[in-house]
Image 1: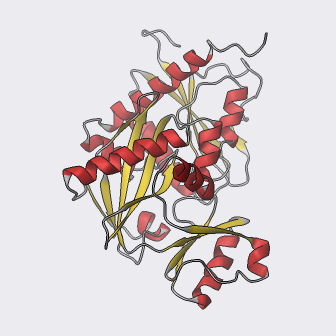
Image 2 (image 1 turned 45 degrees about the horizontal axis):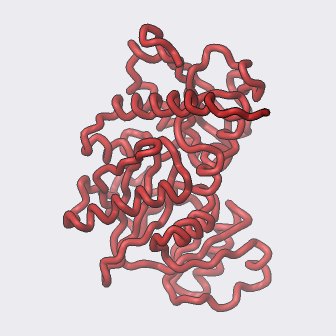
Image 3 (image 1 turned 30 degrees about the vertical axis):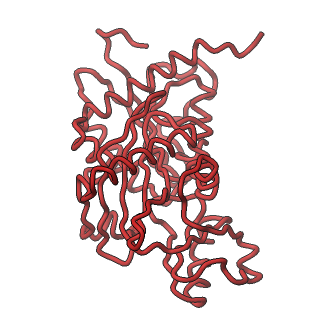
Length: 330
């Protein structure tokens, strides 16, 4: 760990091959601007859409990456948020911000997240998982009625997601999702409200004030998130104190269920008829753009953006120091 008199050398790792490449660029730029230049020396590694690294990729050999104290991965989606990069950083013995290999892989896989949440006693919406092969041979009847949401099992930012209200729309939605993943999840549609809650911390994670997402479209699409600028985000969410406490409790429980670390954003659905909350997804590398909910929720909770980044980097360095106490050979 660097001494207090030295600048911490932070390497931003961003871009990537996923459909969220552009969001990653925007997140990295926001982080770069917010990091205190008096405390941090920032360098960049950009991964192109073709998978090429600029400058040269990190070496998996321990001690072979001089000039880096901590890596801040800002890689949303596949090949960045799914445990692949985290595994490389583990092999290189480089401290890094955010969840580890297992938490990243599990959280990226929507069906696996739901299974672990359900095992932990957390409420999740009914769902089925289909493969490309099953789609080509007919899906058969669903165990729940319309409407449904169809999603690639491993992707984020609402890429490839569709809402289907009948068999014809379902067939088209499945074909769209299959373009982005070989595994597709179909969820029972919930008519109600959408919420998000930020998590920060290591062994004792804490939850931010939740926010409510009010889409301008039928649901919170990629276009609504990043292009149309019409969706509204209400911070704090208009909830009673018990409802707020319940979302925060569920968010921390989800964070622990997938063995996450550092940061996450947990997304919720609330049934408009019953008021029940459902854990929808967990994002281990939430957006850090100027409009992203994660930093805004923490800012409202009393942690300004620069202090949030500082806390995340400190958590990464402390976790790496703790891991050095672990013996890997006899």
